[in-house]
Image 1: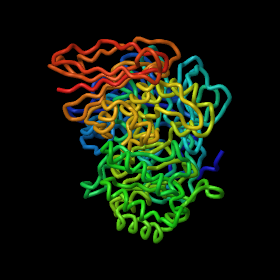
Image 2: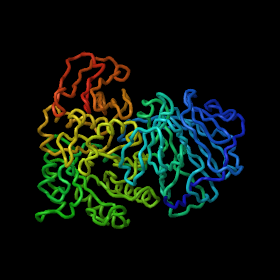
Image 3: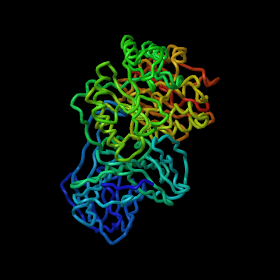
Length: 616
């Protein structure tokens, strides 16, 4: 375990005795009475007990938060602070216009100089600790999460790159370290997703450590002390149905507003990507040229020039590759090693971004030669150093009009709102793993059908989807399954994995679909599904709905499509891309005539899928 010296480490000595009282603060306050506080719509209720908190939803228990460390310190009565409202726009993500509201309460922690701040939204709870006295040092926070044995949960063992599976389990098993997000189903049809948001400068991220059925919140290493006023990041729990979880924007709702005054240069888009077929292809201008040509043919806005471009062959340079892309009307992105994680034996370029003066010089050069963005790889975890470095990178990149994609990095925690030039983050066990180990082949379909309910809920996910051919290790998902991932998985930079000849060999309708594929959405709606079994989402861009679904199982499945409440019963036409029923590498593509009723279910073959493009 890292030794944690954390500005927000919270009062291990506290106990959770709540005095009963009723607070009134105007007509907009949902009163807190007799140890209870509630969300604006009254469905989410936080009940306070001597041994902790209980979060309930519509009369059912969603999550218990036991207190740790009982030394007689009392948590004061809940005091209504204000009604909080979020109303903002996003340049990328699951929704362009985000709105939410909640009730904020303050509870003193034994002294008026330290408090627990709780916000109860209609779709979940956020809480953090605040104070003006120097915070104590500790290895964990005062509140933990209790996930009883027998509770269905989808959780990932922690790694510094967050590249792992979310297997269904009903037990924590051996004690250990867990990453966010953690999805639980405490009662049939009721879900709670645990994560955190708004990591600021001077803060580290946290993770969970299990001891039996109790999961402690443990901040990572904090190297510098802070004096004066302080607060923790927000600990976030999204609560409700699967639709509530999938559609929630709570992570960005509690994060700092956009820090940029000029965002006209930020454009989400689809990217052609070398690494799937050519692990070392970005040091060869001839190979890069193939991906530039593919992007130009399909009308994709971007091409990524990946690692080792600083070792270009045949006397060429990165500027030659950039100039060729511009000549074809394609905007280049280029790769950097963060040089804080994997350095020895790792590809370059290295050590160009670590010092402020070097970073400014490098990003100014990128801007001058016409690079549109940077992919920065191989970070070393969640400690304060890494978090501050990410802030430095995002801010410097914005000064030079560069988009950012973090790889080998921590998961999104709301930065995509604060720094809208951060269009994607890896933090996922994605398709590049077909290059590394055979494990992914048999588990990919189930994993893919879990990610919309776990990792992708909290922010953009650079999974690098859509491979029709094979890499080092084969895939056994169908063509329609692979195409569906481009809609099912949200990422402001959507990197297409496959090689140019594979994409250009597909039917013209598929090529046209990729040419018009959005990388940001006006609206996202859950249609149907269950983690690991199947998933169907509907995403809207303008007047067009994209409905994507996949079968995560090894059996045939009829997938329900209750679409009328989402898209209505207007005079739609639609294009349907689905499994042929004969082979995973064959298509069945159909176009409806006007006013044709939308399908109410689609039959998917094992590990299959579909995309329905509905036009008004």
